[in-house]
Amino acid sequence: MENIEHRAVIKFFVKKGLKPIEIHNEMVNVLGDDAPSKTTVCKWAAEFQRGRSSLEDDPRSGRPKSATTEETINAVHDMVMDDRRLTKREIAEAVGISDERVLHILHDELRLRKRLARWVPHSLTLDQKRTRVKLSQEHLARFQKNKTDFVRRFVTMDETWVYHYDSKLRQQTAEWTEPSCSAPKQVKASKSSKKVMASVFWDAKRILLIDYLQTGKTITGEYYKNLLDQLDKKIREERPGLLHKKIIYHQDNAPAHISDVAKAKLVELKYERLEHPPYSPDLAPFDFHLFPHLKKFLRGKRFSSHEEVIAAVNGYFEGLPESHFRDGIHEFENRWKKCIALKGEYTEE
Image (cartoon, rainbow, N blue to C red):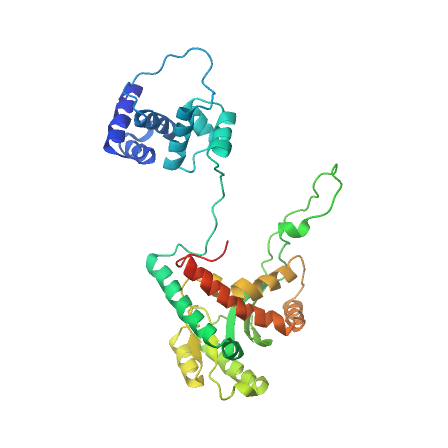
């Protein structure tokens, strides 16, 4: 097809109400490699949306327009609203102005900034968002009814990998330098392949139990059931005041945690399970409080054996004040409130 025929098709679809990106997709589906570029489609769609009727090229004389006119601003705005991932060069070519003018229009006239996408654990469905809101409302109401009792009876657990070596975060390598000095350099290193799986149980006072998985083993329902027995023994030894209170027990939805044998053990122990919504690490105190601090402490350290890793983790937790654990549970309140306010969306910024 000739260029003029392409424009006729674009004009037809614009009249039909399709957006430029939809027009481009339609033309690619039919014409394949012969379809016009997305930039060309956006350019001519914008022209036809502004009332242009001619399919012919405009006469080319003199320098391309570079003035920031209302017409140009509107053209740029329309293109960005149709496809927010367009580059400044694509916009400049489509509208016929310089890259500099495009940036001026985007930043100063339209007050737009290009932001990187935020990674999230999962693309939540509407039902999953509703579940997150529903459970947050229920848990928040219960927490606020008697905060002292909730915190006193609350126990939670989760697993994490601890590596023999994990490189520092980029911000941890920052150094104060003179203005004339270049930025310090550091070779980027990846995580080591050697690692230890730690299952950590804690309450508002301290760590109750840590289990380090033996090499070659996996956490099954039966394995987890045995950990619950060990946990209950620890609670009886170290929390005699809770013997006549029902434990409020929190865990995520890992297969071993919600297996039939694990559920049966929780019923046998008379633990009251605090239901955790699926795909919600932002609503788990391990993920938003305890483990991030542990990982930050371990980053940059090298260990030559599992025993050294275990000693480092145990030493870190033993050195934490009681308030650290209590604060992590109290943070639940803010997380639930934010989840409700965001209608189930992730609470992380």
